Image 1 (cartoon, rainbow, N blue to C red):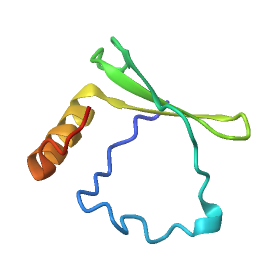
Image 2: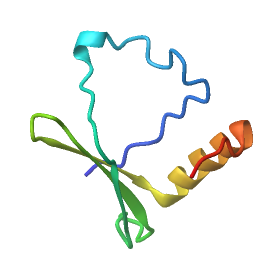
Image 3: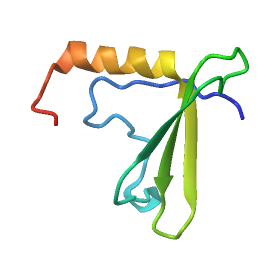
Length: 85
């Protein structure tokens, strides 16, 4: 599996102008997340995200724990605790 990078958009409103409403699949429910110790070719931890689509298919995306951590820290630095639970 090719490890995708995180393309972080800190200004979320209008972040993906290329998407047309009719091309978007809205997935309800929970987003699954699981760490994979040694999941990267380097042996470092990766993280897999799981999104179940309404038609029964599942989307998996994987990135490094380090990249996910940097993205989360950038969001926290920009927005802080907005009452998240």
